[in-house]
Image (tube, rainbow over all chains, first blue to last red; front, side):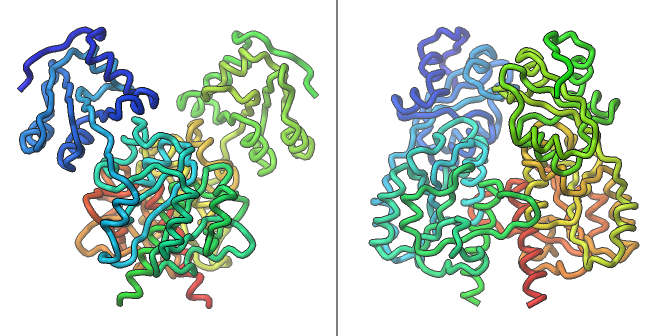
Length: 275
Length: 275
């Protein structure tokens, strides 16, 4: 399978891939890195555009990855490399012995929305306003997939969705869930112009409890930044403010936990309506 | 306030406190470290046994900490130190300029239970079976406090609750929420002998959806290890298996998100009963 073996961290391919560990490199090249057998396998199975795989020559390639590779429709450049090279491309304490280069999806939010039309019933989506912590963002995407959320839109000031920590925390959801990065205030006003509702997570006075909110129509739930909450611009677009009542001296919930409680409650209420 | 100034990382107090960065040191000394103005303030306000505070002489002490210190009932040993000393005792990328040494609580689960008696209605507690990730454990404790969970019991194989990352992720909940570390299988069988119910998070065939479970009586919800789930020993004590239905190709939820969905649903159902 491998036609070459790379042992030098100075090799041009290794240097190019190493740039993908930084947001700048990812933006310039339109690609990102995926580390570890489980995630590489998820990328291949999902049909993501995997362009290159480097695996540790001393450890050979994970058999499940090998099988996923064989049924992958694209021509993947597979390269054996030394442990030093894999170490150079790893962000984890113990390099996992396999890393894949994947093209970012070119999916466009408006195109996706138009394709969805009104045929699939009422969409339920998440708008994430400047989530900063990579673990939080990855966990929210993992949770969104598990709750059958239709799509996630990230505002411009968020941590990069292709950051290695985000990708790992998604546990593969990134390859299966439609995720778009674009201006949230534009997205929100278009969404409402199209007849969608905007539920904004906030402790405003007129905010209703998450279990009393109306999730029945085409709905976007807005989750705010870990420290500052939702921006004023998005607040002004809210159809309803919603919150999770908290007790004691706790000041707030973790953003990923709050997102999880909102989306599962939304789906629970939608399911109840169908009974 | 400060009667001395430490500039050497070789100072015996600094060396002793540095040992608290490791579990072994924390177990030997029965104390742990708390870093950053917000957490030190939470520790002081909660009445935790703060024994020593070191603050960065160049940055002076945070005013809110100073006020909290003034109304703290105990005699705290307050020491000014150099940035190098604070750096030595810090686990974060940018040392926060203040660190406190706190005694572990001596609270005992049986004593706590006896004090609670049946006077406060039906207890709702969490049993955590070998949670490994410090961020997950801290976030679960933060969520448990916010959901007014009465107490949390950690099984023996869990990450140390006094680990710095755990303490930081609790956002202060650790100082206010009763948390006990002890054998979970013993705790579970005693709990049931006392008339408590055990709801075990699991995908077993007979498992009911989290929104159809019965949380009405004295209830413990068991959350399992991130990879393996709940141990066989605890499974055999289950009164009911519960799960959160997930969609698509997602395999599981993050442990802290799952715990959050369970505890808020439990409280929602209890509130509904009271209406």
